[in-house]
Image 1 (cartoon, rainbow, N blue to C red):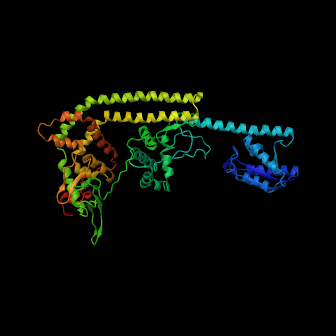
Image 2 (cartoon, rainbow, N blue to C red):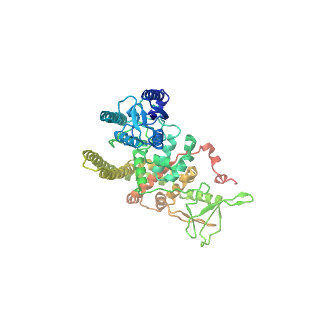
Image 3 (cartoon, rainbow, N blue to C red):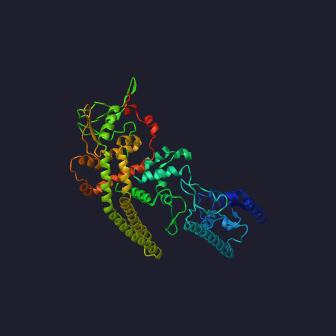
Length: 552
């Protein structure tokens, strides 16, 4: 009688020991006693028998194919124990039947199985015991991981931005939260915060992360799939929220969060397509900072910039691209127009007397209206508490069987979307009620030196600064200069207050919402300004010579 031997271990660690060799020796001794000629050996290294996934058990697949190709010629399929064959009763007998069709019988070295009724009964019991043992192991593993989540510890490999402690390789249990990776954590954090503000799409974020150093830190290029995991599957982990996959209950993670809950909600809204603001596509050219601010004084179209090369090198100009405009083809020197722009900023900069009066009036009005915003925030908090209670009820009804799986996920998604919206509204209400004084202080400092601040800003923030000052752009005609543009609220108020008897207090009260929003934009600009201001002793090195009235 001819037969084949199949040996298997379920982990890489066992491969390095004597398990496979031990199985083979016992199987060969058994074949010798039973008079079975061994014609082939199939050795499976480090694959599990939890289920019969033939893609993972290549040697098992080869063994079955060998029996098929040698149909009726291979009478014996020898394993050390039934659990080496499969740990699932259904799989066990399904493959057992396939072997019988090939004329092959399963033999166990250590167990009395066979085709007799008693032997078939014992085989069924052993296959069931193997399945039971596998289920118990799985349940223990599940319970252990669930307990870790309840303790605030992520039981799996952490996502990008955190270090893996490799406790499993050392045969240890994971008992502490994942530490941050000092190289990748700040880069991924910056990307998520940038995305939460709506400054880029996911496609742009892929490029930005590598520009900020993620590719250099990891040694591989960032892919769209990586960014999709960062903004999707692992997003709650980055906000220090762990989800128990077996109960769907959320727990607070003990690891260092990368983003706030408010930023989490904003990202989820952006990804769901329900964000009211959408994604802001910032387009700027550092070489032409006024390109999206200055409009042609003849056709009211935005000017663009270019740097054609001549015999003496590159020459930079602003010009109108409207072919039907009388100013088309008439270039304006970049140096001249930018210097005139700075002069215009100085011209509209409010004086100290107005800024002091404006601060007093706004502070007085804010004291009256601040309580209103706090009341609004408390209403949002009450609504949020009600929604959280409903959310818990949904989970309870799912556990009781009142909801189907589809109904559960639909109700859960509806409630969580509403929670996201309430959280953002509550955050905005508290910002208006608590941060207006800080916004006023910063705006006052900023507004008092517009020309200097424009130089200090990085190129990507200049367009936002210019829109706060000139919301509709500023017209320019070659040879004439800048026209009279519509100004931002504070600057318009400064211009109006020049007239004798201008009522500042009534204006601030009637336009409070617009003024507070305008101040908040100045404060947000400050938050996004990461680069420090240049040192006063080195400021002349940064600014062009013509700024100081010197020859170019």
